[in-house]
Structure formats: structure tokens, C-alpha cells
Length: 319
Image 1 (cartoon, one colour):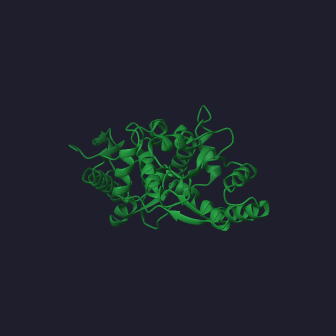
Image 2 (image 1 turned 45 degrees about the vertical axis):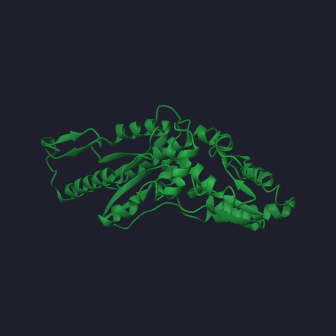
Image 3 (image 1 turned 30 degrees about the vertical axis):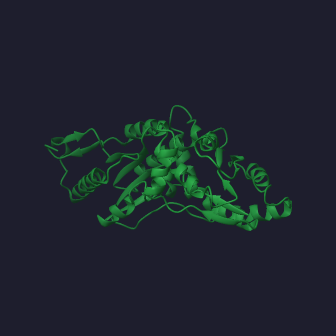
């Protein structure tokens, strides 16, 4: 059996597990290619206009796989932390795809509750039903996938003297087409990046616990906690938040982060299918130049400078 796996949404986080599991069951894997303009354009054409960029990109990946596999693995993530939830778009993703894309093959769309091993194994048994009914074989495949996922370290932490923390959803931070290869652009400027995945879970929980109310959304807690931990532990010289246009969670999290950072250099880059690379590069270059000036000591007397409302950083007079 050929199982198609779209390279979109939470693929950077779960792909090790998914590929190891289905391969151990004897399935042949068909992975969609890295996001490109053709996939994006197809996704924009198929998906609702009101949806965010990652959802449109995912539609493009599914459309690419439609006629190339016997079954599609579309993860319906419901919860990855107990008593917490993720973006509701994930819950209705299957219905969106079936409504927008005709002629889909069989879809492996069992709800995923991944906060406990036993819960995830129940998903594995149901997901493997179309491939095998041998429970021992399923358990062996599951154990192998669980072990491989546990030994995989995610995230970037470049060894540069000057670093920028890159915060945001995995599908924005790790999709080089969507973020226009921001890591490569910054590296060329002599700046490294450190991502939220480099922060330990206990540190994230400790920062999030300071909020007056426990976050309902897991991603909101993760990005807030990671950003504050990086800031307070001096792990970076500045911070960029990659946000999808119209993302409700991001609109709240970025404001909460700004309140805590004060004058620490912070910039939000909004992404959608209309984002122009020229303007994007200009903002990155200006942000990088400002960080280098701070490091060189050109901003010792910040009181004489104005404050930029876009990136919440100090700017030179007249900027």
C-alpha cells in the first residue's frame, strides 16, 4: 500500500514518527515535495480565501498527492497536552479537504491525542487497520516510531556571535519556501538563529505559569514560554515572530510577549500568499543592522532615539 504524507502543517514535528510507523508496517511512503510556488498556487486555488497561509499550503500538498497514493495520512490533531487544545482549524481540517478537493483516496484521519503513550497507541491501532490487523506487528511498529521520535532533536541553534530568536508555528519556522529561507538570509548577514524548540519544557511551563490565566491553547503556551525563557536567559540579541496573517492565536501571543520584552528588539513578520520578498528583505536587513549597531555600542544613549511602533525597537532619529 502506498501511503501519502503531506509535507505541511505539523509535518516538521511528527514526520519522524509517522514515517517510521507506516514504513515498519510495510507501507510504501509517498512524501510530497518541499513547498514550492506550484504547490502554493494550487492550494490557494482550492482552499477558502479566509483560511490562513499554512492551511492553503497544506491543500496544495494534498492535491499533489491525490493521484499518487492509495491512502492519505491527514493527522487530525485534537490535543497534544492534557486539558489543552490546539488551533480549531486542525479539528476541521479533514472536512475542509474533502469539501475542497475532489477525488481523494482513502483518508487516515483518526483523531490524535498525543499527550499520553496509551492514547497514541489507540490511534496507531485504528490507523493501521487498512494495512494489517496483526496487533503485535502494530505494537512493534509503534514502539519503533515512538523511540525514533524520542531520540530526535528539533530546532536550530546556530553558533554565531549575534543571534536572533525565531519564534512561531513549526510550519512557518521550518518551511523554507513560506518563510523565504529566513535562516539562510540571516546567516548571510552574520546572524544565527535559535528556535523555541531549544527551550526545555520545564522552562516553558515556568514562564507560562506566570500568566494570570492558564493558556487554553498549547501553541500559545509554548511560544510565549519559549520567547520569555530565551529573553530572560540572554540566549539571543533580538527576536522575530513569524506569524500567519489572520492567525487568532498569534494575535494574542505576540501582544503578551511585547508586554514582557520592553525595549528588547522584537519584530513580527506577517506571512501570507501576497508577502513580497523585497519588502521582507528590507525589514530583515534593517533589523539586522539595528542589532549590529546595538552590539557595537551605537545606542548607549537610547533616550535620544525615537521608538519604532512596528518592531518595538529603538530607531535612529528620522527613521
